[in-house]
Length: 515
Image (cartoon, rainbow, N blue to C red; front, side, top):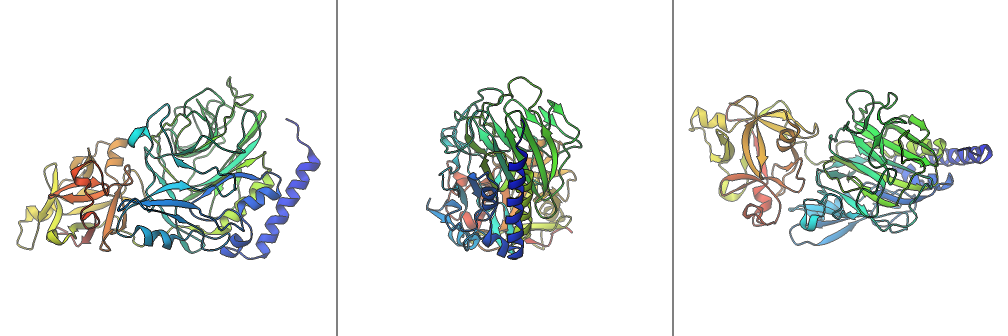
């Protein structure tokens, strides 16, 4: 499609003016308080029609709610707003509300004013694991970071988690032009389908080629891939993840190695682009810009205008990832506008370290002691494959001490988390199966890696750590009747009982009984 050079030049100048004005106003939180990404898109002539973030306001003047959380102890909800206009989310308000219990993110509000909020995804071509076939909601405390020096939380998508809005306003349909960007955790991904953010079917079902246009991030290779082993930024256009004009391999789409990733997809009649960069520094690179894929059904496009997060258009929900912010625009943004948005993102100051605890040190040998008043002499232990809590003391046998000692490894499925290898059975790890913990040999499978990966958080009762399951993000390692499970705070299983839950899921990391 031919473009009008005078119009594009004027848009580029306008976007550059916005960027320069924001830079002169100061970096970091000061910059975020005066100009947000959606202000830049608006100045570029491609306004946001959806703007989602749990970490910060995306307009300089925005003071409304960013997201809503619900706590397990009484099902009460509260909205989380920015600390100030255009600022970072008030994580302290969430921490206070969720203290001593678990919380999930129930709504991610649309800051554009169009009401395109994201809520629990309903069943579609695939059912989710929650009641009625809905997808799970994200654990509200599973992805702590800092933005501009302030603590904030992302949306931690474990397999089975998803958000959606099938009844939107202003989102592109048919072959209309649109753009979108998202900030992801570049270290949290898998090969499941499909960790997406963007435009999808309004029926939650696969309605054919070209009925989606969404950002994908992960390392699945079934439909398309780039160089290296991934992860890659690709476009989910339905029945195809595209890394360029070809189905399958495209050499210009690189593997991504940044902790925080800016991912960009945009499309207009017979033209689309993939762009990406480091969300902490530097500029965007263009990985593809050209004609629609050379496969039938994608030119023209047939976009339907729903919005998804963490799932595929047909509610495929096997993926994993973490989302921090993202927008969708009306019209095809210029590269100059997107470059200014990237400058805004890097100035916002995304960084790790938002958590209140770092958890046990990878490579160390430890023991894990219960904190519930009844059981403070009991430690997670094993006898063969059976895992339970056992009383261990200085007078215990050397075998009992060894069985209660664990080597902390980098998480087999998530490097930001940990896995626990048995001190006395090399190559065997704590893993859950049917929600109960066992000691099993690592079989190298993706399922085992996920089952054996746990993410440390501050202890729910204020002591030690609580360990969230990597693939069931509302479940934590818990002792119940001396057995060990991954348990939610309330549920259909006896071991999900809310009674003393916060104590039972809190563990003190001690020196190992067997160094």
